[in-house]
View 1 (cartoon, rainbow, N blue to C red):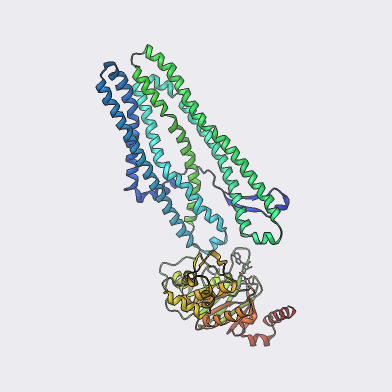
View 2: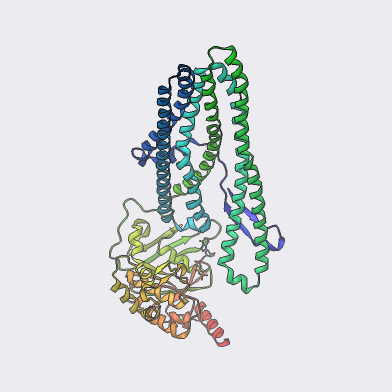
Length: 608
Ligand SMILES: Nc1ncnc2c1ncn2[C@@H]1O[C@H](COP(=O)(O)OP(=O)(O)OP(=O)(O)O)[C@@H](O)[C@H]1O
């Protein structure tokens, strides 16, 4: 369920978080069967060991009360045979040991099973999500995807570690106890079991109530998480607008609500244990009253029978209450697995054909043939655009914000497919080519260079994982990044954090140039940085660019027109249409839109 939360205070309306909150779903057999498929790889190894261990400990535990009641109390004690008694006592000790070992083995192996299943499921989900198209990520926040990969799978972990085997164990234990009790004394058994349905009903209701309260706690906790996440990410902006007090006030609110929900949940949970104990006491009272009466009046009910019953009654309530809990757990797992399967069933919008062509050695000839494209139904981002980028040409895309520059780049990369028309490279429609091959031929250098956590060396090598250290350093030298890297504390081995906060904007750009150069693509797409960089770095970047673009088809999404004067072709876009194109001189002569853009940029610079 996607739940949108709003802050109560009107001035804090900006805090709205859309979150995925797991809720109970009706029991769904198909989904359970699909989930159990993840157990299959372990069906011949870990699972049988866990089941056998569980069976041994259960059978032994069930046998002990019978031995005590029927044999020791009813037969050995009246005979006065001490030797036999000692043998029985040793036998019981051995049985308890066996039950202990069985339990230990069961717990160990169900944990192994649960961990493995969760590992496989998370791996499967991650590798699947990674391959999904941009459209999938357009519609979801990173946070909600992370929640599914982590939290939803974690909630299944409980089902696989404790749930399934325990369910089996509890059912076997309960059925066996009922059968044993009915065999040894049907009358007493029926009297004692009168309260089972009542107990089961109340415990399930109570559990449901408790679960709801914990769900509320989780909702509150995710609000706290979302707020923390946003506050820490945006702390600089918060400080610069002096919004710390507002933020703190809001945090205080969600913190308080979390605290209250915890109080409610723990209060309700505290009722459960006493309830189980009360049922136990109630059963024992029936047993003592009616059992004593039967001992006196019914020769079939011996003291041994009475004692066996006492043991079995003690073993009864735990599985019953656990079964109620199990059912709740299953419902939670249903909702978690539904959300996981929803992702797993998601297919990439950009699909590879079965007989897709491998684009090996391309020349880099790009053609847009009457391409129309919309991100959503309401707006058209590109209107039947036709254009050509010849191999080795540098083509600049200019135009106001939102005019469709990045969209053109996205289509060349085949992050999306055109709604109409075709994008072709070397004459082949991109819908007919293999995606990996296509993208290996294209490098994208974005405005906001993404730096992964790891060393500088690893970050550059991301462009071509099999490149040697020497090749990485060579690429860095060519684009002029080597100087600043050498000055870092550990040179190429310097660790950078995710997003590369220790590097300046210009340095990050140079790093991404080195990364792109190392990949040695035939086509380069460059989203030119708008960040203001000092003139010295600017010159460095311009030189690096020349080297990077040499011999490749380059598409520059230009923001500063001064940098694209030398481009072979400049395409001016407006509202998804091509207004004009040509080289700098031609367009300046024409005195059209480009001329206007250049003039306004120079005027702006003059005013500075
Ligand atoms: N993922 C998306 N989902 C829906 N609409 C989008 C998406 N990305 C872009 N758009 C819309 O498509 C249109 C073209 O956007 P595009 O990003 O291509 O513009 P741009 O010229 O690159 O702009 P800028 O210079 O600001 O980067 C805009 O109206 C934009 O709002």
